Image (cartoon, rainbow, N blue to C red):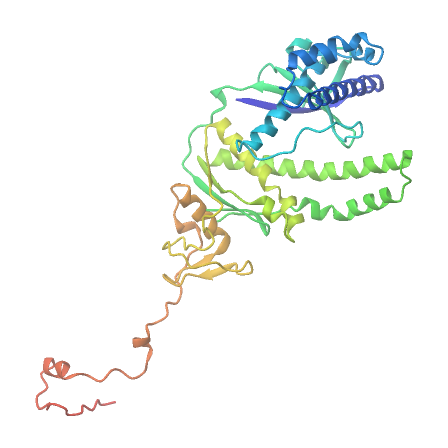
Length: 419
């Protein structure tokens, strides 16, 4: 499978100017191709990528208006056209129902917070013996290597984010040598807000709430930004401070997701989660907490790491009544308000923790070999039937007295029971 490895870049002042030139040229070619496609006659097919490449790159370099396209590598301009093709393909696949719907491709602005260019093997980029990234017409960029690449990368993408940081993203191929040895535990995971994750074995993982903890710092940075004059240098500096504050929150959340997902995949042979309606929950009053948790990113990490390390990943339907079914006897006890965290099964009397019970039901719905022993089930008080709850027993019938061998009982005669 293909994986992406990201590393921080530290370009010099001249290299930053060269990268800005590359970002701008790639953006211009993308916008020119988008206008050419939209300007076609009605009913005519879209122009092919080869024709656009000849018209917007090869021939455009010979015109005074686009002569500066020759100052950057031609590969990144070709890749910009491929990006437009992919955008249109995703748009039409969404209309056909092959993938979630997305908007049509739009013009890229030079004010976009994120800029990126991609170099393939045809660009003849390389890694120097000193550990620097050599890019054509840009130079040797300093890379902060945090780990070694598992294999030779096929492409590299240079990204500049809203905080002004530069990253190199390498695409590498991995083989089956990273498959972990088999293990016995299988776990179901119930994601929530009070606890980020509750496992079917009874483990509860607290939610770090990175955004909530950083709200005070973010509020101050945003207030300083709102007081700056639009278009001034001070406003741009304040904008970068806000972007860096948000980047720290996002980096901390991503690190937490990576560490937790890796631990769960290494310790369990199979992992089951519930398909949550994140978009629906994001429209409620819990929207900020839902986005702060980042469930979708965490589940995506679990899925690709399970495929990478030879584990089993199961996603059950979002309409499974995991919080309504007793994990001990399987009886559905009906919906319950969110404030009910512990409830008693009316059928078997088991006292259940809501989150752990849901995690066990997630694992059972996925077909994993788990039991309710980890769901903190304890025997409860079973209500006595109405016939046994009274203090006065029923009056014995004639048949009862005859079976007891008590003679002298006449038909219709009243029976007095001694106290």
